[in-house]
Image (cartoon, rainbow, N blue to C red):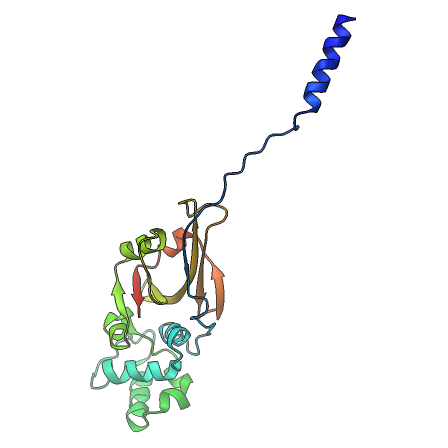
Length: 214
């Protein structure tokens, strides 16, 4: 009889407890940066126009105009093919430059001719000439995490990929619980190669080694 009473007490005690115990840490938003209302989805119109497209996404100026600015400021008057003949054959380069010199609007009216005329070597002088300032990547990372640090305008991110590079626009981030790999943390960029926003990891973000802001 005593054994039956003891068994009943144990069953009743177990019945008052949840079968599994979960503990969810409360989400704490450490830092949020959001430029989603200031960055447009833009698809690059030329094979090597990622910089021009990223700039258009931020400042609204047409990619072909940014391309004109680059060629006018950094290529006119130079005899050498800055892109290398393996990427743009020398004769093709010379013909394009001749066309540019004869018609200053040709980067807009003949976009296909200048499709490969991107920013050679990620030349930061061009970013500066278009009103962008170079930001140390370590400082940028701190700005994304520190509530006391401020990012005042959208940011362009560039990384080298062999002889070439790629440029995207940082759009927004949410940094939860001081952990980029927390389930609630997120980072969003606009990639002009695809023409739309996408989420990336913090590790992927850190692959962009050049940072420019307005």
